[in-house]
Structures are given as C-alpha cells and as structure tokens.
Image (cartoon, rainbow over the protein chains, first blue to last red):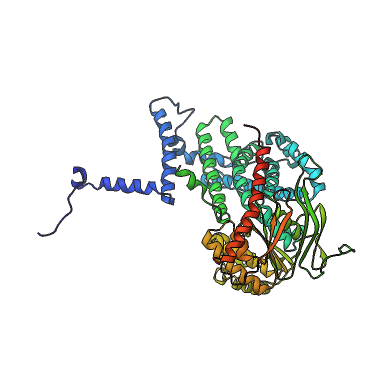
Length: 312
Length: 275
C-alpha cells in the first residue's frame, strides 16, 4: 500500500480502539466555550458538586438523613411529598389526604400561585416606583413632599409591614402581593431617581434644542433612557421578592410555597423542606433567566464588560 | 422678548452677542468666570470657528447661543429675536455621540419632527432626504450602535439638518474621530454647509481644522474666555491646505494660541499645592 499515513503520536489507549480520550476531549472542548452548551455544563457541574458533597456526607454518616436528607432521599419521595401541597383539602376535617387534585397538580397549583404573586407584585412595584421616581424629578413640589418619606421608609424591613398587610388585606393573595410591592417599592423609587440623574445631559439638550417640552423630554428621552438600567435593578431585587413572598404566605394566605414550608416545619418533615427549597431555587433561577433574556434584548447596545473582565 | 435693540448691529445677522459674560455658580464660593465681554456678529451663511485652549469657555458660548444656558452678562440675539430659550432654528451638535440609542437612525433624524407631531410618512420622507445629504441612506433602519464613530456624527449632522436650522452650532464634533476620518468629515461638512446656507459656529482647539473650515477664526484667551482677536481666512475654496498662505495662517494662529496656553499652564501651576 502506498498510502502515507501520518505518524501516530497518540498513546496506546486511543490506539487500542477506545475513543474515550476523544470523547473526553470533545467534552472539555464544549465546556471551554461561552456557548449555551458550556453554560449548561458548568451549571450542572456546579450543582453536581454541591449535591455530591451532601451525598458524601450522608454516605459516611456525617449528615443524619432524618435532619438533612440528601437529594436522592427528598427527591425520591416526590410523589409522597407532593400530597402535602394539596392545600385544598388539608384543613377540612373528614377529608382524606387523597381527595382533591393529584400530587402533581397540587405542586403545580402551589408553584403557580406563588409565581403569580411575585410577578404581580413585581409589576405593580415597578410601574408605581418608576412613576413616582419620575414625578419626583419632574415636579419640585412632589420631590419636597414625597422624597423624605420614601427615604425614611426605605430602610424598614418588609417584615415590619407584615401586620399591616394582614390588617389591610386580611387573608388571600392581597397581603402576599402587598408584601412584595412594599419590599421593592422604596428601593426602586430611589433607584429610578438615581437612574434619571445618570441620563446623559447631551440627550436632554438635543431634545431641548429641537423644541421638546418638559413633558416630552421626560416621556420620550428620560423614560426610555432609564428603562435598561431599571431592568438591571429589578433583576437584583427579584430575589428579595421571592424571599418576602414566602414570609407573607407562611402567615396564612391559604396556599403557596410559604405555606408548604410552614407545614413542613410544623410536621417536622425535612424532606418536604428541602424539596420546597429545591423548587423555589429552580423557580428563582427561571425567573432570573427570563429577566436576563429581556435585559439582553433591551440592552443590546451596551458593551460586553464581562468579556473584558474575563481576560484579566 | 426685549423691546430695546442694541445700537450697533444689523438686525439680519444670524448671531449677535453684546457684552456677553457667564459666571458658573454665580454668588457662591465656587463661582468662576468662564466668559467675559464677548462681542460677536455672525453673518447669515458665514462659517465662524471659535478657537482657544481647553477650558477657555468657547463651548460655554455655544451653549449660551443655543439658549441652553442663560448668560449672566450681556445679551444675545439671533435674527432679531432675543435668545432666551432653545429653538429649532439653532441646532447643536456635540462632541460625543448624542444619538438616542433606543431609536433607529431614521427615527433619530426625525426626532424633532415627531416632537411637533408629524406623521410617520412625513417623518420618513424628511429623514430620507436628510440622510441622503450626508450619504447615509443605506443606514436608515440601522441602530446607532451598529455605526462607526464617523457615521454617527454624520447622522447627528443629518438630525440637525432635518430641523432646517438657520444656525448650526458644533461643539468639537470631530474631536473623537481619527485623523483621516476627520479630514473627510471636514470636506463633508463644507458641502453640507454650502447646500444648507446656514451659518455655522464651530468650536475646536485644532488650528488645522480652523484654517480648513473658517471664514473667520475667533481666537479666545484662556480663562476667563475673552476674544483675543478675530482673524479672517481669505483663502479661496476649495482650499489648498499645503499652500504657503495656509502655512502662514497656521503659524500666526499657533503663536496667538501659545501665549494663552502658557498663561493657562502658569495659572494651573499657581493653583496646584506646592510640592
């Protein structure tokens, strides 16, 4: 044969027919990039590491499965735990645990209810806060009347508002949404004002020389100019919203993730606690991902600072 | 509007400054005088370059003429009207990109028309026309972040032209561009200026740029900015910038500026704490 083959520099393992090194190399190659695949890889690896340590602690007997059940235990009993999400029948005497919606439906109803409260609260808080923030800069009188109160109430922990939420809204969706709004509102107002002060004076001056009125400048220049920054602020406050909604729900909204955690606490059910934590984590992650996508759409013109920092 | 007009100016002049001064933060401890005793007449269709060391207040004068800031001394008129507020008749173009990043190129160009409530069709027509004058018809539907620095400044010029201004105020518009692009932009600006018939007030600290563009160069002293001298540039257009006359003018302007820069440096050293 006259075929010229390149010299084989590979070691014996690959020559012996195992394409494993090649596969491993491909795996590492897919992890090296910045693509979606690489990001999924690293996310899985990060979570896997955490779970692995936990499982290891259980294996060697450091983690008592009755107190800190590792993932394979609390996730293994999903169907059983799912029943506790069935809040529709829990409180009624004479109803068995098996009445009402199935375990899966119960989990979904609970997740849906909590997510809805966070979302509605977030929406109300942003619209309200951006309006108030813009008005503060728009009207000097409004500034003088409102800003001191907002600054005064801003550092108050949302927990302190919990009784107020119940006084006003009683039980139901109201107090939970109210708590989310209260937790975000004051910070968002201050952030809005901060963003307005950061708008390039050139943009405002251009609009002024073109004969724009004060209202037009606010509506057509300042509001679009601050929206991307507000989205970033909103993302940072999203996790706060998730924390507060649990506290609100645990005080008697009727159903929701917070209720389930309280139930788990009262019935000494660590598996349910960790299952709920896992669900909340995934929900928060998903929400953040959605906002990040929205941010990327709107912030398309901003330079890639993360990329610059990475090469340092 | 002021009832009494100053004695000594032609009411048809594009810009008239009489005894104009500006003190920032007047009446406070941080007060500092940026401009003093500015008397300047700009004829319709004239190209005037304001030349001076950095921080001499030439940009401040532009802002005052635009009506974005109030003069603390003296008065400014434009075509018989007292300048008190901004007007679409006097467009200002900035050094840094001042395009709205959330609008497309054509929406940026027609922003002034949308302020007046013009229909979309009218806005697009005017934008297309203005963009054609700056040679950017193809970029109409692009976003500002997709354009180079030179293209963005051309869009800014198109946006100013779309308002059909009588006076174009330009605050070091090409300062952020590289040398080659800057030379092209100067030629381009002269074409646009000839077509539009507007007066141009152009701020720069580049002597070459002043000689290339100006009918008259107004040389400023360092702070507070006063007019040191006004030098007419009588070179025929299109100008040969390598001619002996152009070289002579550059040397003269360089010497005029050198004194001011020396003075500014001496002042800054006096202000700095002793080592």
